[in-house]
Image (tube, rainbow, N blue to C red; front, side, top):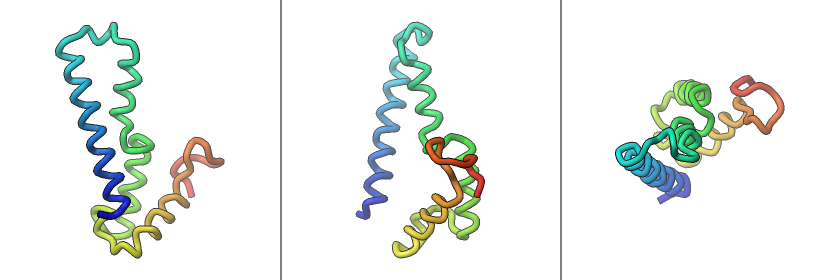
Length: 101
């Protein structure tokens, strides 16, 4: 199993745990009174790194590379793909506007 697959598997597992916890809290508690609920909900909504805008950009990059998932690329091309993504997307910590080359 490649490192990227391990990371993806780990993130999916963590997402399931968060989702299960949120559903449990929803069924058993008054959510308005739970400290940190909005933060937890926000994290669940933004799980895919940069939120909706990043998702759109990432999908655009997949189309550019003519694949449905980065996992469809040969292993030797995955680094090139992610370098291309990194060039095109600036995080909030980097100069420039997000998603602008």
